[in-house]
Amino acid sequence: MFSIIIAFIGFQEIVFIIFVAVLIFGPSKIPEIARGLGEGVRAMREATDEIKREVMSSAEKMDPSGEIKDSVKEIQHEIDEAKKEIDDAVGPVKREG
Picture 1 (cartoon, rainbow, N blue to C red):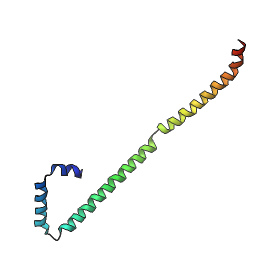
Picture 2: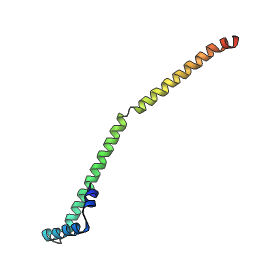
Picture 3: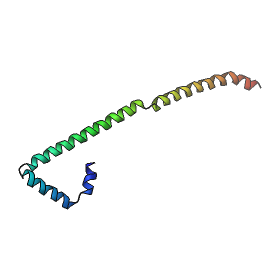
Picture 4: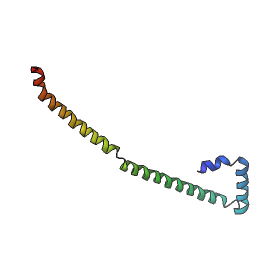
């Protein structure tokens, strides 16, 4: 979001904002303000990263595709065993016929 805002602000606007900040707060307070803003931006990024991790973790827990794949493998294994049993039972009949 911050990069989107910067994309619409030109160099002249940035210089004007800095000039107004110096007039209002004085040159001695600017580093403190910048430090505070930096810490705020960092905290916001960490919070959004944490939210992303939580959402991804929840999505992985709720993803039924893993369970479905396991069920499909189990069913396929049972079908293969049934085919083998049928082939074993029908094999002698095929040979005689």
